[in-house]
Image (cartoon, one colour):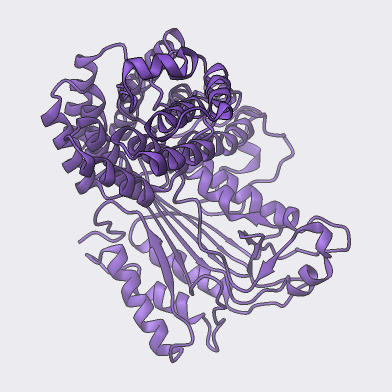
Length: 570
């Protein structure tokens, strides 16, 4: 997931007093200015008042504020931002800045949200709710120390704030302090046992600790509570709690090997309307994982050949026509997927990717990783290997994905290219390739650390096909790969993921004159160095590549890792 990363949108449980007196609110109309009014009626009533052009200044700002509340209930954050911006122009207030900041938070625009919460706090008085909301934005950015500091302030103002205890627990868990996280979330449950959100987050902690039965029990209770009494807080995005509950319980069922119940929960997740970034990230994860567990629970054909990837499976003669049972979850399991494609049939062949893949795979095996390795894979084999790995990775604590070969960006999305790719007039470009975003969504889970490394920007073999596709197809290709977008917008990948490219976004990497590319040669030398933290390791790789290529190639990375990660033990 990622983002969730689960990534929950948990905001304060209280509603700000509107920036106007009770008498003024009465004049403005109760349907517009009452928080219990259904969203559509609220929006319609406020719009009619605005159309009258009777009120000005503070009273008109109040109307825009309340219409923004209606839009927020509907999950239309762009319109929340538009109406709160107009309210701020007319009459700035804490309430309006807080609401607009919350809308930016739900869109995944954390820096803008923090700026709005800063402005709200400047207007005073000191507010635990705003400290709490700003803490959420810091947490969205991955700055957990600042998030905890804001939650501390919120708890100081209101020691009975269950949400602040819960979210401080989430931040502690993100930093690896599972016991501290559990203590805070237990306190949130004691303060308000009717809230489903703390139970959802405790589900993730139990999964991280390997206690899947407790995780499933908490997920089930959270879903029951969310159905029985849906959150009425206007700051909570519609359906976000229920979506998160189903996603987390599904991940627990899947880790336990109960694929049938996992499928049911993933289907339930996808059947719910999502409005906020975190919920959409959860649904992206659910979509990928549903396909994975559906494959896992399907009967294996008796005449199916034995897999050829590493590690090898039992001989075909020993396989049965039943769904495979996963190994029990083992905390600390480390797994890697390594693919090197060079023998392209219809685009420029690359001599080095198979060598690169073998070298990196050997280095990872030497430090204890379980490695699935594939060389010169066509689309069917590449897709199967990737899906098998994503399914197995549900039980891992650290995952490394490495790909060497051709890669391309189309309409801002990155694709990895199998060796049999052949684009013909009228054929769908992207269907012939492997979508990197799908891999990232399949790994999106806040209890796992993900290291994704792509030496896949050696040129753009699709350039002439893109040029001949015609403007009516809406395809835009470019050299190199695009900067990833999946780390933001609420994806739970942000809980602990590093993505490294052989060169900067939009730039072309070198295949090299020797047996390996400059990037992969340096990577295979340093990745197994004992006691070398992964970001320090990539810094050494970057320095070596820059020196070797005389600054023609500069490796690039984007990290949301929560602390120090060591691939090779000290």
